Image 1 (cartoon, helix red, strand yellow):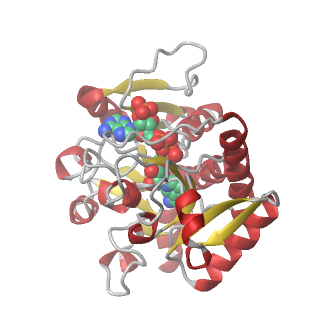
Image 2: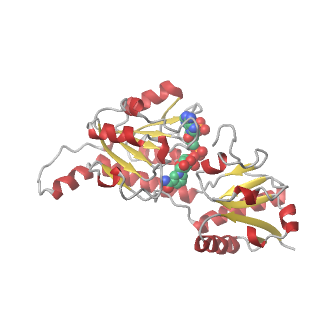
Length: 320
Ligand code: NAP
């Protein structure tokens, strides 16, 4: 008798079908069932569920649930939902996702480093004008957040010769075994100011929590050197939209590459679309790859059912 695993999602029907196909292919030893197909016995027996934008009312109908496996790396909606505090949350940690984010970060860092937005504007008005060229080793990049994604991004940029500064909540010892060995690391509010003061390009890869919501406002963004640029690949509300616009308009900041927004999809009337110093991406920096994510979920479920081990979970108090 195959173990039943509930799949709970509010995504549209096509997306749910794609997920079910991918999960079932990666886990032929389990029966993955959408909520609507669970019997009351299935609901009572389930101790783990796979979730993607789930209805909490449905999750609540699994009385013996111990943990949920999210299909996303960002779990702020689950964390701030009414999900019972006893239910552990496992976010998606996938090397393929980290590598996708590294590629997005490298692309946008070089885009800013080689001043492509300036040449694009010059092209529109037919202006032939050459600017001095700096080497990566003459450019400083700050990475806020040194987790599964930020640490990979920071290490790779350092390998490409950028001077990289990283910021996290906890102290990095700088010793072997740290996840950002190529990077000068800072923590705490003073550390944040230090990283901001030095960063000509700032990459945001923090989770959205009560502490990071609105973190980058006028006061903090003004600490960046004049002419600095911002890349937000984390979550929109970490950077205060109006404050960012104000600093771009006053030319304190040079450019912003934004993949994430307060409201997605970005409304057609939003000022970001037409702003010449903003590059808009439609939340595609590092999408979840269904096949790869399904393989990770399969490994996690096997560990849980074979040796009783729940993968590393979100700290519900810390929110990430
Ligand atoms: P993660 O592994 O949880 O790492 C979070 C990092 O942020 C850690 O280094 C943590 O510090 C640091 N941090 C958290 N709160 C902090 C605070 N208050 N002060 C200083 N540092 C703080 O997260 P991840 O997997 O790297 O993902 C980061 C975010 O990227 C996700 O939450 C999601 O929102 C976003 N994302 C975006 C896309 C996209 O396509 N745009 C795709 C995937 C994910 P410690 O190391 O000290 O704990």
